[in-house]
Length: 392
Image 1 (tube, rainbow, N blue to C red):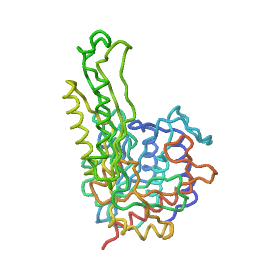
Image 2 (cartoon, rainbow, N blue to C red):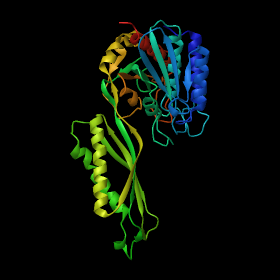
Image 3 (cartoon, rainbow, N blue to C red):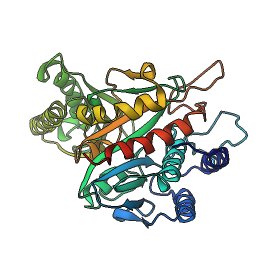
Image 4 (cartoon, rainbow, N blue to C red):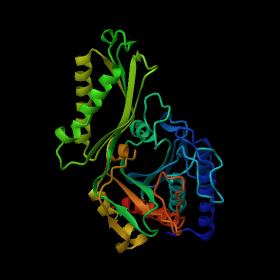
C-alpha cells in the first residue's frame, strides 16, 4: 500500500486547513465537516455526532467476514496563541493545534484512503474523536474518548491502534512502551467552606477556610511519600490556591486545585481514596465542609504486549526494525486510555521532529510538526489494520 503523490498532496492540504482552523474540545464542527466531506468522497459510510459528542465521527469499512478493529485520531486543539510564523498558522485567536491532532486526523484519513482499496477480511472502524485535551463544558466532565468508550458503539471491537506525533523524535522513527505507557490523571478542584467573621474583633466566631485549606494541602503532600510504595511513580501537585475578600475579614470560602498522576491504576485509585479521607478528617476537625470536583479523570493508557507483537511486521515494514524504539513510560496522559481498558490496544509515538534548529515539545506555542510523518503514519495504520484482519 502506498499513497500516490496526488493523495499525499491532498493530505498535506487537509492538514494545513485543519491547522489554520483549530477548534477547542466539543466544538470541532469545521474539522468534523471536513472529515465527513473526505469520507463521503471515499464512499466510506459514517455516523456523526456519535455518543452525544456533537462532533465525533465513526466511519465503518467492511470487507467480508472477520473481526473488527479500530483506528483512532483526536481532533481538538489547545487554548494557545500560535507563535510558529507558519504560512498556515492558526486564524483563531488563542486556539492552536499544539498537540498535533490536526496531523492525527490527517493520518487517519490517509489510512482510510489506503484501506479503501486494500484486501482484508473484516471491519475497520475509523474513530475521529473530539475532546481529548479536556472535558470542556461537558456536564459530566467526560472527554470524547470516555463518551465513545462508554457508548457501546465499540462493542465487538477486538483491538485498537492509535498514533501521536512526537516533535522531538526524528521523522522516520516510532516509539512505544509496553504496559502502563502514560499516566492516570486526575485534575481536581477543592472548595472549603467555613464561616466568615471579623478577622480582628471576633476571629473565634469564624471557621477560617484558609487555615483548613492549608492543613489539607500539607497533609495531602504525605500521600505519595507515606501511602504509596516508593518504587511506584506517582505525583500529587497542588498548583493553585485562592481565598480572601478583605484584609479584616475571615472569608467563608477557600479553594485549591491541582493534578494527580500515577502509572499504576491501583496506585492512582489509592491516592484518590486518601485525598478524600484527608479532606474528611481535616474538615471534621475544624468544623468546615468541602466539595471535591474532578475536571479531568483518565485511567492510565495500557499497551498490550501481545498486540504489539502482532504489529511487529507492519512496524518494521514501514519504519525499519532499527527505527522501532522501546521507551520508558511518561507521566503525561491520554484519553486513548479509555479504549485501552476496553480491548487490547497499542498507542505509538511517531517521530515528527522538524528540520529547524530549535524544536519544541507538544503544548508549546512554537511547536512545529514535520509533515514527512503523515505518509508514514497513514501507511502504518493501514498496514496495522490489515495485519490484524488476516485470517488465521
